[in-house]
Length: 420
Image (cartoon, rainbow, N blue to C red; front, side, top):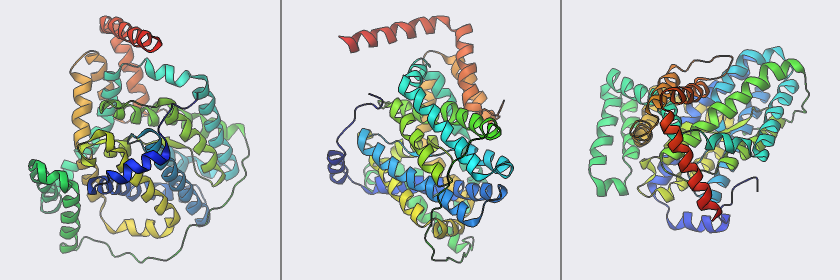
């Protein structure tokens, strides 16, 4: 089977409604705010830089959030893990620089080619084999490096504006110290309420006129040119395969979930076709949003954190329907507010990633992966997370050969157990 076997969607819905808490909905909302406040503006700026019309820009937004919302709900119910399907933010930045060199139909053809190649690699089993042979500590070192900026941005905002963002952090940790209370009232929800109240009191909420206008998708038929393939398909392919999806895989591994690797590549690759027809670039499995939903902010029970991802999917689809309205509304709060929320939501994930990366084998490789991921530099139009894993593995092959021998024995034992 191409996709791993999962649960009945109907049964999962029953589990969802029977275990629904404020923490699940609140964390889903936080993840949505994170993935719409900044990224939505990035997509709009890319559309403007690329010379797209307003209608094409809104259609692009609708495609990304509609497919992301529906597929996130599906994945959450199918596998009962907190996995979020989204889109590549670096990909949107890249497109803002090159779209004006091509017809939009050429770009759409390039998007779909990325989806086709990903589908073929997933169907062949090649992706799963590669991921299975990457030592988990090295992958977690990369994840720690990628997520580090969220923690740094959170504390930077708190230090610069302690009267607002510092209060949010203090309130979060004080609430977290009361275990019983924090299980009923998510600390991050109180932080949001306090933050919005303090922003309003300080006059930092921006009044933005809202126009009631629902998204109107535009259909685009794809065409193929070699120039678009080289300048769009190739860099987007490496972003999807080697950078974006692998982050989410690493995040889930850090939280000890059983990861449906094929499904996490297969579903986004289908999105490359659906998004493309509406002018949107390929879907990916989202690392940061998955990290937020997989964190303890979603509740103590890890087996129920999929509910937070499900509600992020609901909010995403709602955002898609009202893309024009929502994009105006998200300009109300400062960017620092979103940075603090993202850092707080992923606080527990930081600890899990660092513990998994540096407390056992492959330490040297994990450290190299961590520092390369921090640089956030691209080489040959391929992002730092990909190179973090490559050089992390190479480092371990050179200085930690014994760890690889042990790793092979463990993998062989797992294979024998599975075949028994």
